[in-house]
Length: 309
Ligand SMILES: Cc1cc2nc3c(=O)[nH]c(=O)nc-3n(C[C@H](O)[C@H](O)[C@H](O)COP(=O)(O)O)c2cc1C
Image (cartoon, rainbow, N blue to C red):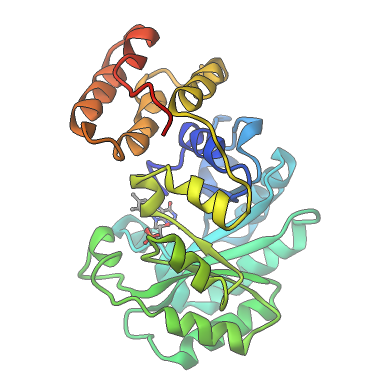
């Protein structure tokens, strides 16, 4: 998730869930294949298993980015075909590509051609603009799977390339989990992952009866502790770190992230832990304060509850 699942956030998430597969933010392939070397593909070893998500619309640079990703040790390369932002529509990547199989199939073939050790997946919607029929989605999945993609993450909403901003595109088009169940029934050999509107552990359990996995977005952004429930219920691996222990582990890995100059990136993920506490408004303010200007770690930690979660 852009401006959410950066390396710091993922490292914090990993403390709460050793087993979940984490995804990077969407990275435009040009950002890693052109210009100066940058840190976009850097991560802390504790973040693994980790998938990288690319935005791409041209096979050559996409193949290059896939090779880099494999070299960097990611567990999966994911292609974003679901981003509805105006910049994506203008740049012809993300959701708008979903309508254009002529452009998508060479991208899938490019990934297939170069990835030797790790799988490739597509993240997309259940339809785009006026292409909302079962035939459209079934044909998309059939053709892209024939080209080599065996894993699909479906945000179970139609996306609109015009008229709705990204936020509304995640709220207004109705959720249709059932369509994803039917897709899985039609393509039992493919790995089909459900995404969209999942907020309860009971929902995860129910959805896992019909699909191969669930992807959680905003629920985790708002409440990282939900990963504890995921770990305990789905992976049968209860994690019993107290809040002080979580913070201690998080800050002890801090120096590895020296490449980020601002404190903002270090402190911001903690907002997703703060939500749970009754005085979370004050805690939020302290986190934002610490993100703005240096604060003694000890002083910062004194704002947090001492008891076990
Ligand atoms: C702030 C924000 C940033 C997002 N960035 C991405 C992104 O970079 N790549 C992506 O595939 N989806 C992105 N999404 C969409 C989510 O991955 C997810 O598909 C969507 O929010 C629906 O799932 P949810 O109901 O579990 O949040 C983003 C969502 C939000 C709220």
